[in-house]
Amino acid sequence: MNNDFMEQQCPWDGAHEACGVMGIYDFDGRDVASDIYYGLFSLQHRGQESCGIAVSDTKGPKGRVDSYKDMGLVNEVFNPENLGRLKGDIGVGHVRYSTAGASTRENAQPLVLNYVKGTLGMAHNGNLINAAELREELEYTGAIFQTTIDSEVIAYHIAKERLRTKNVEEAVVRAAAKIKGAYALVVMSPRKLIGARDPFGFKPLCIGRRDNMYILASETCALETIGAEFIRDVLPGEVVTISPETGLTSDQTLCLPREKEARCVFEYIYFARPDSHIDGVSVYNSRINAGRFLAQDSPVDADLVVGVPESGNAAALGYSMESGIPYGIAFMKNSYVGRTFIKPKQASRASGVRVKLNAIKEAVYGKRVIMIDDSIVRGTTSGRIVNMLKEAGAREVHVRISSPPFLWPCYFGTDIPEREQLIAYHHNLEEIRGLIGADSLGYLKVERLEEMTGGLPICKGCFTGEYPLEPPKEDIRGEYFDKKES
Image (cartoon, rainbow, N blue to C red):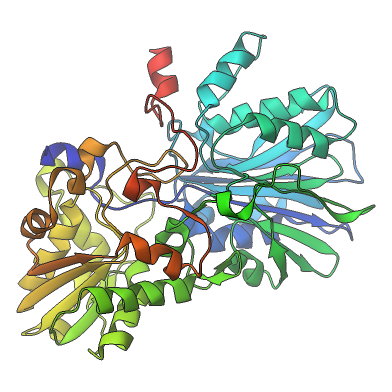
């Protein structure tokens, strides 16, 4: 394996999230931008590259949309001045982590389209596997694209279908029938807010309400942040429409039988905030269960169980509860490393981990430590963290991972790279243990995943190579459009 390449590409090793979406419609006509801002703030863990908000006044000039988006964290991009200029009672918001398309301001969302029927504002979480094919089809009909993201393909198809449908929600259903892959959408038309979830349910989307204000959000934690009540999840394959005339209505044309649903299991392992619920299952309890299963299946004598912040903490607590070994805090995480942090030069790149994470010597000195983390992708960071604990005086470090080994890439919105970059593809368990410097290593068993998520149908493709729908023959994630244009 090329360690220089791995360090350049991923100084902070691990699976990454791929966007959060939010939409609000206040039937009482109050401005929604500040509520979207706070909701996006609570979804910041899902993407830290860029963010944006688009709003419209349903009682003002039809088709006028005010928007603001830029690179950076929510509190870096927005301030009282630019947020105060966003006036409107309907709006959508987005935080982005790119898995397809370059990391540029042009690719930030929401997207706003002006077309013959008015305007559309749209935010998308997920990844399409037929985006290149659909984009080419549009290009040969004269479409001119402003971004390199597959989200714009979805928006164009919605606009195209709207020309031959009686309403925008029907256009969303028709467009959704054409696209393949993972998507949670929030779409703002001049007088309606629409939410759509792919038929497999890869990405989460829920519905909330506060007084006469309806909310769509990637996670329930965003609802709680703005004091809204959770109503229900959008079903896999469902399109919901929110308007003052009809309230909340549903179209389930695209829904699949339950046994064909395939939620991304990494929502429960890593992506979602522990205080969120997805499809009726507590993310916190799922991680506690993962830790319990690790203790049952991969026990080891030790003095202390610790989690790698943040996603490893709940699983570490579950391991401690099941094993009886005390749970402790061994790491101090720097929460203030934002986009503007100056990355270390190649010669000091290893220090990048220590900027974000430091071991607490007093907690681990002379102890046999069980370290719980959510995943190992390339292995570079895992090795550095193990070494960090040993330098702090840990006598032994036993690593337990609350997911199975990554053996295959993900095509549906999780940033898991091609197989050649996955440490588990090249090495067996004992070899990985040696490479990261651990005294022992254990992964969660694949057969434990459904049990961990309360029996929900899930996608395990990155662990087993068995995907719920046929993956693309060529891995074009994040590269297709740049290669095409070069």
